[in-house]
Length: 127
Image (cartoon, rainbow, N blue to C red; front, side):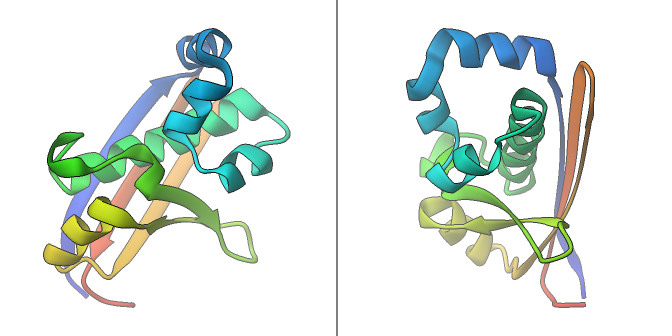
């Protein structure tokens, strides 16, 4: 396994909560896929803040931000049976990651009170 890319992001939960309150469903739909919105049923703002940090970290890891057609809804935060987070990419964001040789993502996230943080590593192997 070789590390191809790394990204990290920190989100202010209170500030992000204000964006959710102000933007409502339209804001959520611009940032999250339906499954994520449904899954964030408790500690909603903390969880969504952490998942937003994951998405930002992925965009940083692939080096595009929002250029080249990458978008938040191309990145879905998913969890395995044990609850460990990962990401599933689609669309242009997946194309960019694929072109970099990224075949596996490792995700670490945390949130407490006013802060949510995420770190992602894109690798070219399964190990």
